[in-house]
Amino acid sequence: MRSGIGAFAAAFAVAFAAPAATAAVHSSSASASAARVERAFPAAGQLLVPKVPVRRSPNPSAVVIKTMRQFRSDFRAQEVFAVALRTGADGKPWYRISIPMRPNGTYGWIPATAVELAPTVSRIVVHRESRTIDVFWHGKLALHAQVAVGARRMETPLGDYYVAARFVPDDPFLGVFAVETSAYSRLTEWPGGGVVGIHGTSMPQLLGQAVSHGCVRVANSTAAALRKLAPLGTPITITD
Image 1 (spheres, rainbow, N blue to C red):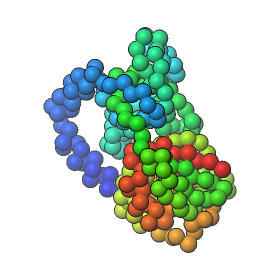
Image 2 (cartoon, helix red, strand yellow):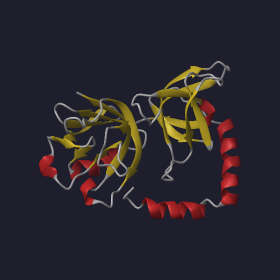
Image 3 (cartoon, rainbow, N blue to C red):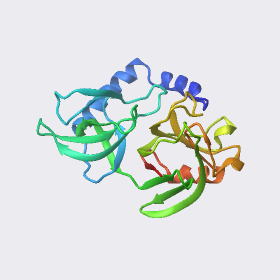
């Protein structure tokens, strides 16, 4: 990413040298065995184990859809977003989670002991047709603003997603603050392409139009407000 990830990665590599990494694995295993089971949804949090296979059903023998790791390739912690709880074939609790991958809307199951969750406190709704965004905080409307969305054939994808990462961009094109969503588009202006972001803009005159490659652009004042109102794991609905 063009957001100082290189420096972050270097610092991470120093902080997590081999001995520390080994200790972290043992610590994660101990934490996993004592994980609290969350029963209020949606809920979000981070993995307690180095990696976990996400399965097609709540069954240790079910097909693995994807393996999620405690840290992403950019060294940020992997955020997990859960929507349901069920007792699995092994008699233990499992969470149904949203998987950030193509195709959009892919869900799977992980053991509840692999992650520590807490109920989400905010919600984002993007209205593609009216080109507006609503942000709710503890169930109350906290922000309503205009946005720009994907152009024809590069439409911002409809569906239910979540905030997967947050950062202050070093590229003025992305404005003063940005959140990475779990959604994927045909192509976006997001660093690396493909991932749909909600970010500020250096061209506020384009707000209200369908001009992006899939990202949701907002005024810098709106982006600044999202710094408080859109914590990691915040559910996002993109609708017509």
